[in-house]
Length: 130
Length: 374
Image 1: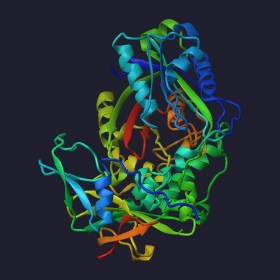
Image 2: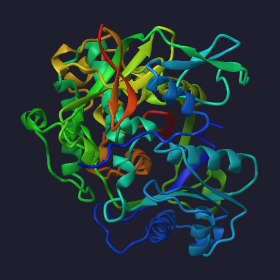
Image 3: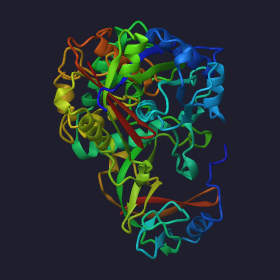
Image 4: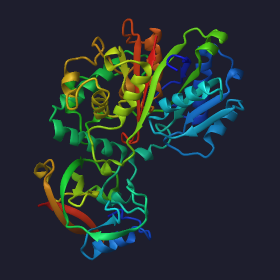
């Protein structure tokens, strides 16, 4: 089977993926209060760089999703149909993820909760219906 | 500056599969034809604005093209605003002419993803490829899905857009796809990325197009036969990636249109015919709403009444659009707007006085609006 595509670790993104590996979803929060994902060096609200990693509750809501019926990568060939979703965390940041549920169980703004799952040993932030 | 600047000439290559042609050669052919259409000698050109090819990035593309055109322009640039780049280029040309920086500008675009590489359209979307997040289509599918969740339109709403564009393309001898589509065929087609069906998605095409922009005064001096005045333009840049966007079913297209209508002193009700960027059918529904042709969530009713079809009060994409004429990102829509004002479209709206063109790029990341008039 083909290798699963995995994130490229950079000095900026490594703490995010390391935290997931240890069982925690984290996001960045600036001293101005703004919170975000994915990792970036400066706050988009105040443009400052005085931010820290903060642990997320793991709760969020489902914003939208799509269903892939054909695979764009060898590693997903055996998984179709599979979903890719946007989840908005209760703390504000949004991320691309998968919902561990059949398409028929997905609904607008449904509450979801973090379910860390591994691909080739690498921890990913997936979600399941809350 | 309403009406001070005109589109003096239009030109394009064949659309479809054009093996053995690089993008510079396609641009040169389109520019040659646009200059011939304007009746303007090449030596009159002193500016070249070109959108960089989507399917392959090249350094100094603007200079490569100017060299191939045998020009040393006073002004020019190669730039990227996705599919909004063409109307953006026309804006840059118009503003530069008004400011005395140049007099006669070529605005052009060419690409060859059909015979070359279309990898960009199937690309992994950064680190999120780990979740299976691939392709251009999937980003639009995400918008389409949220639109379904918010407004619950029937799938036929999207089908009406595809059916109307395909009917217009079938009547256009230059269209890449001259195959009309029935609603039954639309609904029965397979998913690309659900909720996108096959015919929600535009073509992938080789080809090029160009226009000549100058002041109305210069057009008179040069004896241009059919100059089409630019009445207004505007831009709006949503910028946020789809996943980060706080609002998924509306974009800065609203701002682009408001700016263009204010400049032209016109309102949506004054538009006779519209070329609405149709890379995916959801883009058309959202643009109709953002532009004020109908209220948010009401585009389904608007298109179901037959208003956007040929013979309706707001026919759209009268040469077939991206869904049927060519998948080229946007300049073909400007050419068709010019034909409507000249009265030479293959799906002519009788007595059209105001033609609207929308351009958008990325996954509705950026938007530009153009109003042309008699």
